[in-house]
Length: 539
Image 1: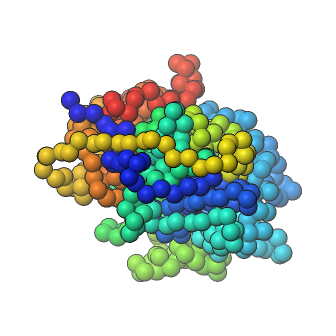
Image 2: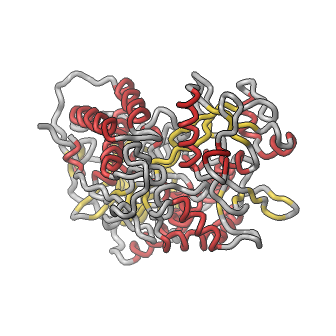
Image 3: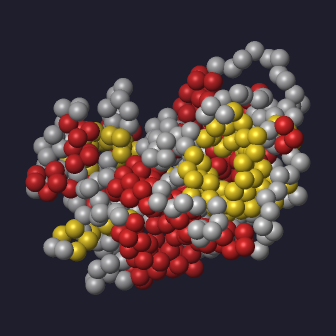
């Protein structure tokens, strides 16, 4: 039987181009750039990202960044809101750490040049689902990620020790003697390169593209998670994919996130008949945590046999709506929708991977020399369900810790740069070529049908068998470009997600099993699920 390969491509360190850096950062979202900025100026940093440096989940973040700033709010309130949303799986010490460091991280962004929205000379604060107080800072109304990344990218480019490579696909992490030594990448126009680094920070984002309906940009294909898994890093919590409740649904068009802040400012959810269904589903109504709202929408769509529900802002002040949500207004207007009057058609879409590479409070993974921050990780902050606007602050806090820790580790290492005798040989495959686009579409459709908002054992077993078959003939091959590598990574991540969902026989947070509909601490499910299946077993 064929086996999955340790590396996705063949290479030999003896005849491949090399590049050296003290610290390699994989990913140029907020977590990656924050890590790079924390490295002292006398150490070299190379940041690689597979698309443009502006193309990341961070750049598309609408709602904002959570941090205690008002006299009415407290760290204890923010901690408690996070723990409630996490449904019993958050690590309290991690939550405490991130919440307490959040205000200073927001100040750091301001120092980098981020221009947050203000009211009466103070930072404007809004409230989102699951938050007990107004504590979300935002920029340009609903374009917080864009403004934050604009300022952070510009600031990073002023640092002489930081070099940013875009159009650089990280194929795999290089390992030797049990430690991470850098990465093998494909750089536009230069082919394969080996980047040797004394320390590596993985900040490559999530895997929303494993689903047909997603808010994520096309770059979110789980490359970092899959590469870390092949390198022997521990992954956990892979059953917890958060579905954003409100994604603009216009048949035939690209999906577009409708921010949590819209409901935070008072928008109502209505079914096709105009009924506010959240009034009966949860005492917090539209401000319930995302997993609860997403499942309520799912049940409403099934009950009404309608492909979506609607967001209604018509009862709100039109001037406030247009000023607060200019980006959403612009998109909806392109479909002939007036958000001050018309109902906005929405449905849930895959939004944020809660699970990922296991890290400690400083961002260390289980592989020496490898650190990780942001959505690629499972830090313990989010538990079973992420509280709205906690992700950007997690990326900032953990990016800072990773950059600082990696720099301290570099200082303890020899000054010289070293290339190691690493090679990968993948036997040629004489089988007929695969239709990558067709297989990708099949995978994304299967995940929606059988690993979506509501799951049950029979459908999960069917999905596992389909994935086993696809992995068997796709993971043992060598592809020569991004489309093939992304497909292999998505297949790997999907297999792990389905296995984890089958293992957790209860419902908790974003993971809902119709055959086990209740949370079950008594059976020991108030613990994290660590991926135990070795990579070679995937085929």
